[in-house]
Every structure is written in structure tokens, then in C-alpha cells.
Image 1 (tube, one colour):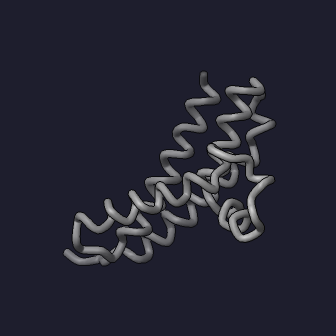
Image 2: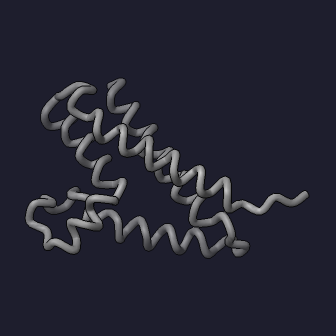
Length: 115
């Protein structure tokens, strides 16, 4: 249960940092919701949650390789279906944490600094 909680927190932070990066320069409050809704749907399908990533064409494999959902789905599948430990999902967690750090750093640099 603790391993699942760690993956959920890492995934949530990753998605929040991606959302911050998207809305760093947007002033309309409805636009980030629409963008993230579409992006969420588009990133879900190449993640491997619906179909195995080995059967994807090469151009979708490229998208799948940078998609944070892919690493979340792999970690969840490893924990739930295979009952593995942190050693099996360490690469997935590392990618999620690095992606979050890069996206949050980019969002921090892009936010306007005004009073």
C-alpha cells in the first residue's frame, strides 16, 4: 500500500507540474482546463494503459517514451499485477521525479514576477 501511495504522489506531482508549465503565461482561466483535458486524453492512449506499447508504430513509441503516464502505468501494473517492490519501479519513479523537477523549474522561470 505504501508503494502505491508513493507512485500516486509522484504521478500527481508530475501532472501538477505539467499543468503549471502549461498555464505559466496564460491569463484566461478556462484555457488551461481545456488544454489539459485534451492533453490528458491524448497522453492516456500511448501510455500503455489500453494497449501494450510494444505493438505501437514507431512514431507513437516516441510519444510514449516521453509520456509521464507511460511510467505511471508501468509502475502501477508492476505493483498491482506482479506485486513487485521499489527496485522494479525505481526507473519509473526516477523519470516521474525528474520530469516533475524539469517542468516545475520551467514553470517557475516562466511565471511573471509582478506585485
